Image 1 (cartoon, rainbow, N blue to C red):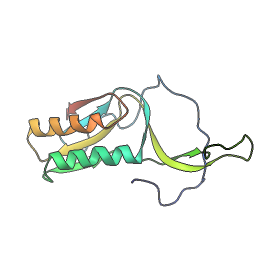
Image 2 (image 1 turned 45 degrees about the horizontal axis):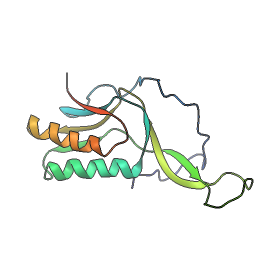
Image 3 (image 1 turned 60 degrees about the horizontal axis):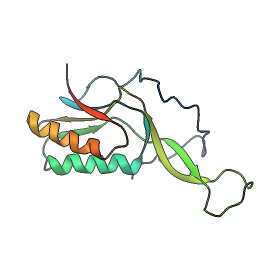
Length: 137
């Protein structure tokens, strides 16, 4: 599962909900020929990223190259069940990456077009955001 080796702050504040915000960085396919682009916003955690990566590499039968363009570095906390109020913030449960519309999540190169598109589509099913496959301009 993806998670940072070291963080500056152990627990973060959740931040403002930017549900309708659009991404300003990571908008173009930079490394591969085809990419998986997010059309909606959500928090994607390390397990979901790993699941999508596995589905891509499995579909490509370990041919070609895959790039992961996101990394979960935001800690999310959770309090144990049946805990009363008070007692502070809960322990870190998982790490997430806040995906906004327009962000390229995965890239693929070195395989035929049809194979790359189908592999990225299968990865899109594993993620909590709506996605589409885009080609390099």
